[in-house]
Each structure stands twice: as structure tokens, then as C-alpha cells.
Image: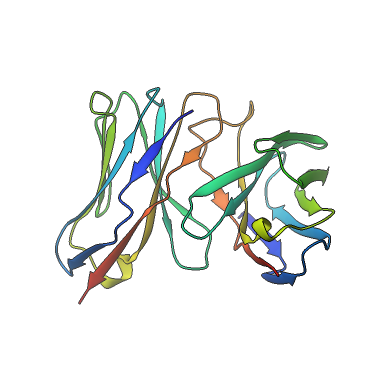
Length: 111
Length: 117
């Protein structure tokens, strides 16, 4: 089965800096990789999806990269704000299958 | 627009008692529906998913069961709760023409916090 590794330690950064979160996976290379944001006590919210043939995807201040050789995705938030503080989950799946979620990494942006 | 509802928001139940959590989706037809559990310090664990009325796939064998009596209603049940059933239960839906796919965006409900004492 697929194993997903996200840094269990919280990432603390200052407002205005770029936050970079890592998602590593083992076993098969997924066809799709997604990133979600989860606030305490709430359900996750979809942010971005990247396909295996895409190297990079951007949405406003967010950028996701997907390196199938390294079996890794990086999630960047530029010009981070305290409102970006949350837990970020990566999720992946082969073509036609349910998603497997990582445990997530907590991001804390201090003013 | 589509919305997803879950209730109750919080629940405290004694060990051995039954459980029924309900999830309904509005504004879409024939969605894929999912039940997840998120225990403290753990990731999202997929429990069940459904691609249509009466069609349930179980991902983890346990004392929970799911049913889909209507197109946009998904119910999670247990006859006898265990301490290990405590957690944050999330319902989600996605649009898909041919069952769950890795390209599906999942939309989550607000969740139910279950504490079994």
C-alpha cells in the first residue's frame, strides 16, 4: 500500500516569508497528487491538484511541484500571512482509486 | 451551489452504545460519498465509500457499517461502540462519472467529534 510522509513537526515561519512543505511517498507513483488545508475542528478544503506529467502548478500565492523521480511534492506559500496558519495535507492516488491522505504538517505563521 | 451537512457536531457516547451519524449533500446528483475518521495524531482514514444508492465499499474491517438509503444521504452506524471508535468523523463527496478517481476533488463536511467513554 502507499505510504505518505509529511513532516510531523510544525513549521514556524515569519509573516512575509515563503513556507515550503514536503510530501514524500513510497511504492507506486501516483497519477494525481492533491493538497488540502485543514483548520482545527474543521474538514479539509481542497487547494490544488497536480498530475504526474505536470512539474509545477500555481494558484495565486500557492505553488506545487511534483517530482516523480524523487517521489516528492513540495507545497509553497509565498508572502505567507498569519491567516495561512493551518494543517496542510497531501493526498494521492493512482488513476481510478480512492485518495490516500498523509497526516499533514502544521504551519504557524507569526506576525 | 453544493453544500454538505453532517450531524450531530459533537457526540459523547458510552462504550457499547449504538451510533448513527448522518451526512447529506445538496445541489448535486449521484455523488461519490465517503466516510473518513481522523483520530488524534493520525491521518485521515477512509472507512467507507459509495458510488450509488445501496452500493457500499468498506476499506477497513471493524464494527462500523455504512448505508446509503438515498442518493444524497450517507449514514455511518455501529451497534456497539468501542473506546477506539473515538475520533473526528468526516463525510465527503466528489463528482465522478465512473467511481472514485485520483483526479476527484473531495468536498468535506464540518465533521462530527465522537467521544466514547
